[in-house]
Image (cartoon, rainbow, N blue to C red; front, top):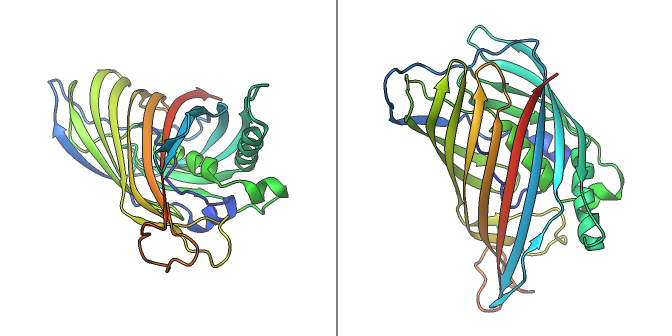
Length: 316
């Protein structure tokens, strides 16, 4: 499945993320087209002792526009994160329970990278390096839970980081397996996955439409189209000054597409995903009443983020 860009406004530290665990309910599936015969029910046959490593390569570019002034797009340094996945067992219903922990996280900078940007990215990656947790996924590839173990904040980087990279890791694990419908399907089949996501800072509806491109034994491939939307809502941030009126998400739309090659005995597929998120954020001027939309005296900023994510899995 396509790993979506981090939920807008995600600003949970590892400890806060653990307190919230994973508030996303299990996704719902809807078959749109059964595809051509022959058809079969696609199910994972998890192996209780098969450890895997998830490699995530993340590239991001961002631009902003405010009051008609558009800033040039900035390419952020690429990030590579490795996650060890260790099975804990397979239930009689075919659900896989597993523990996970980040084994390495690094950001690649060069002499052209602005020092402030390099410092900010390093702070984000420093948070990710200490992450661990657990999860449960069904035989159809639907995540029932992904939690993050509580860790104490360490050093100045923990105070400065927004936690967006932490949320990216959690969402990637939640959506890592290719999901399958209940019904039997053949090549050309199409199905929809609907998820209601909730992080500490935002509520998001995510819709993915999958098409079965090929299936041969236990190996297959999918095409995936993703969309995310968020209703107007407060944008809470731990970096905001005490008592300051909160900023708001006025609108948010994410879209993207990807390809996934899966193996029915493995959790981590090979996935390539490209997506764009456009978010309009408003903040009232000093003295503006809290809880009311900003008027002409408020600020309104449009942020555009392009994300490229490549996932790969290896057996350990």
